[in-house]
Image (cartoon, rainbow, N blue to C red; front, side, top):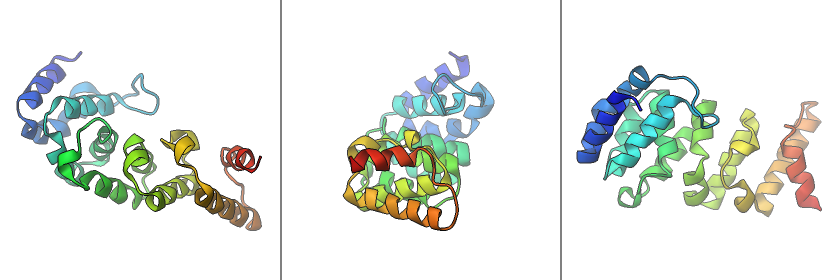
Length: 184
């Protein structure tokens, strides 16, 4: 492990407000290349580790997201599922909702992680899934789809597929097996 990251982990473990100063510099300190976790960069992993190490990190999440660049926002969204957000109220849901209003596939993908699968209400989750399909984000990247798919989501996806077909456009290949499987 990088010496800078080791020290930063100790510092945030002692005081979660240190996240404000170390979070922005993570990419410069540990790099931005791909990590062993598919779809994640090494700075994503390091930032999530910092969030896990900081007791009370939930209170810092809104500002880390608000003032962060895209990589920092992505890490906050990925970190929602490992941080105890109980004290933060609906802050995590609000961050996911904000990310789902963007057209940044990296943020939308991160937003539809395990936290969203667990905390979004049915309507918000369905709309998040449909946004992913519309943006070409693979269904495999959406957490909880196996347990959150319901009749209304299937109806929405069938309507999407019908609109694409009527317009002479391709239907995402990973959507077809889901619709076929659910018909059986």
